Amino acid sequence: MSDAASDSVLSALADARAWPFEEARRLIKRIEKRKGFDGTVLFETGYGPSGLPHIGTFGEVARTTMVRRAFEALTGGQIKTRLLCFSDDMDGMRKIPDNVPDRAALEPYLQMPLTAVPNPFGGDYPSFGHHNNAMLRRFLDTFGFDYEFASATEFYKSGRFDEVLLRAAERYQAIMDVMLPTLGAERQATYSPFLPISPISGRVLYVPMKEVNAKDGTVTFADEDGRDVTLPVTGGNVKLQWKPDFGARWAALGVDFEMFGKDHQTNAPIYDKICQVLGGTPPEHYVYELFLDENGEKISKSKGNGLTIDEWLTYASPESLALFMFQKPRSAKKLYFDVIPRAVDEYLQLLAAYPWQEGKAKLDNGVWHIHGGTPPATELPVTFALLLNLVAASNAEDKSVLWGFIKRHFPGTSPEASPLLDQLAGYAVRYYTDFVKPKKRHRAADEVERAALTALSDALAKAPSGASAEDLQAIIYDVGRAVPRYQDFEAKNATPEKPGVSNAWFNSIYEILLGESKGPRFGSFIALYGVAETRALIASALNGELVAAEEKAS
Image (cartoon, rainbow, N blue to C red; front, side, top):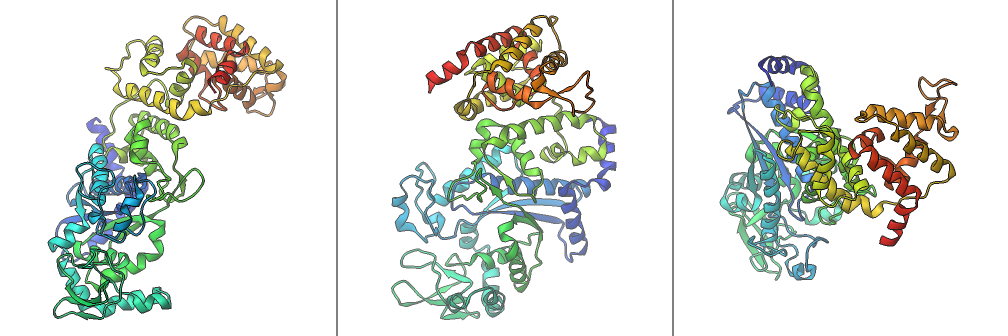
């Protein structure tokens, strides 16, 4: 970005209205009121490693990072920031996830801390919790997040939480006064914010406390064999129930900002009160909507019904995933494989628009937030949707086939000169093979469609060499406009002499030639695929070859 462009962006900061800037402004107001501010703002994200990390986990880190970068921009980088990714890996394994190998082998370890459960995936990680932590960190590192990782097991056992745990023992009744009104009568009778780790079995015990000794910093309870046991609350001998744990962690670490899903929204006031009881100031919150699977059900780590991080990255770039997270975080969105192509193309469109936008528009553009204010200068000649249709038409099984078409239409391009385009070509082949091809169903043309496609082929044969995508699109419109079935007299600028063209014409093209119900601008497709190749494709469709090949394959 030039110095002038950079100055334009900086001058527009006051007017930026993208949601990370709005959250950053709230955080600035908090800091201005904070007494004893030590010069560092702490952002935190939480992760429950009861199952493999999923995209929602990544989204929390990505979105928090966006707020962090907006805060740094608004404060001119004069205030230090930290991002702590905290794993609740000392939680007991309450149920065995569906998506692990040999579930029966984990049954003896139910209720044990996740970092004490054997790793069902094998390898070098000593426990299930360690494995899942590593899976999260691997991706965060690959993406380049600036963060610190924290393990609840380590913090409890190393003494990092000892001070707040001793304070919880001193203020035990005040914590109970917060919690008990939120519980049913049966739960009230046995509830304790402290969960001791059984010296006998190593399990996390949900048992009432017989005594809480604030002076000695101990709790007494009945262990699994019925005998009373007294343990110090420090040193990893106990952990806190999840609601008090939220507030205690905020108080212990001095967290300034944390976002969480809508399923935590009703509990947020409880977290805040616990934090205050323990002498802390609750952080600023941001509540986001939950992701849904293709059936509209909430994504669950234990069910494994959502996309994993690795699955998205098999078919698209991390930047496209980050854009998906940036867009409308307070609206429920379906998160499954079908959303990937659109996310990729929207990212590319915003990236191409960024250099031409004014200061405020740049700051509201998602790519500013994805790239921390410095998006790369990239403009691609084709869309991801167009590459997918090129794969469909050419039956490409390797991206080198796509490059043959790309180089012919865009001389001078190459995988070496355009690494992003090369990456997209690989994504397109994999996505098409796994998700489009199995669902693709060509159909035969009826008599009207046969005549229209024959007319299209004849018109393309007369197109001048090197015809542009716009010229080819105009030919497609002219052919469709001459067919009564496809005439649209209510279209914008339509006249009785020159009607518009209905979507039915394009739907017929896609269904008959590509085996799909929709696609990109077909003129752009022809320009990339080639006029001769498109005419050959039409001939194959009208000869019944496409339908026959599909029937043979099935």
